[in-house]
Length: 303
Image (cartoon, rainbow, N blue to C red; front, top):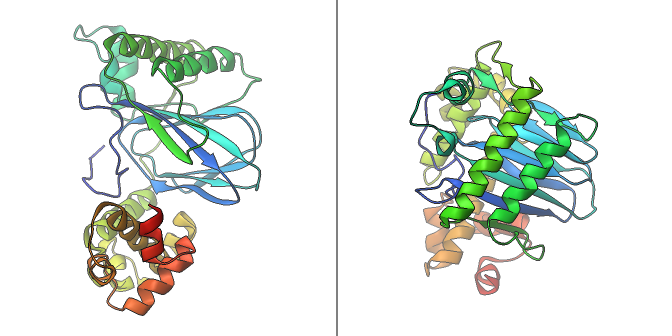
């Protein structure tokens, strides 16, 4: 799959440069978007211990009602929505398949790892405790989480860990290979039946454009031109894929960048406003309060 360098790919690096693998814990505290739409070239394994979630992947919706393990293939556009106000944790392991590659081009490399990397083989979407593969995969997943030395904090709303310890890395690689072997033994990998939905690629192209141009004025016509669609049809497609209008997404994205600038720089609020693509301070303050329930100065002080 062609890589698209963009800050709309997951911003944070997954793991370290020499060992691209990391674990995450996301804490849901109410209904709404838990993880916003994004994509990355790594594989992601998600563990839901319970609760009610909706996993959106490539414009398809997968309801989660109980304990399960889900898999995100490289390049898939995905998000997670919490459906209840109950408090739950979602754990994830995100890793590059490159850490499992072999110098000797053996059968596993030829028939499993390479086809996954090139998108010819797909992970199963979700497996539940009813499936015989669930317990061994869950056990290996748990071993990976513990191999990082400590689990992400239950007190932090969003926490993660990486490791440079080579012994831990060996255990992690072993557990990941065990997961792949288990899925393979149960014939849970499936060949790609058709080309990736062109609509998904169109949405990813638009998200990339927004990420590259959010500091400037963006019109609906600018976005529609990126994918050769008329404005009306494009707006319907975007809302179906992302769950909100293009302009609502752009404002949300700009506020996300503004929050980061308030946390990491000493720029004045008016400068942050302009740097993030808002030409009107009043509109910026209104949108900022809408998304954070506070003012920029109060947000900076708390951060």
